[in-house]
Image (cartoon, rainbow, N blue to C red; front, top):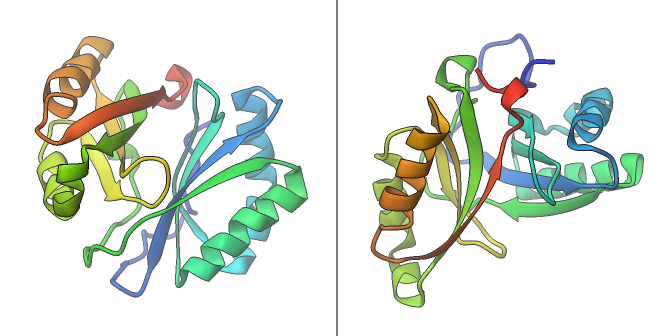
Length: 195
């Protein structure tokens, strides 16, 4: 299996009216089985009007991560509810805050051997400058996507590296070492689904 992308059509030109979200999905199935079951029902989700920008099986409690877009938050919420009903999945919906920037599909050319979804919690004093923090984090090596989100963490980031040492270097010294970062939580993508 390859990383699931939206379709064979070119990536959409996303603009401010579009909403994005990360869906962190759990079930009793293995991450690979869970990811395959989501692929099986994704056409039903597309009919709702939700498009996939990135997906991968993850190590850890959340067995699959999805990064999606739609014309409205209501469509994303409907997609999450549909996934829960169709497949009896636990879906943790993390709506992205509107930052006024465009965010396109993550293409295969940006994927490296080590990839992870990093949840970042900011210190209270840094939450007032969340937008600035996101802009600073975007400049780090290997950052594929970074978004301020609603939910348990303040920021979600897709991070890639050529090996675990490079991934750890960016995570520990550049992200955790950044002023305003309180904690991070990382879920690595199954190695067979990167690069």
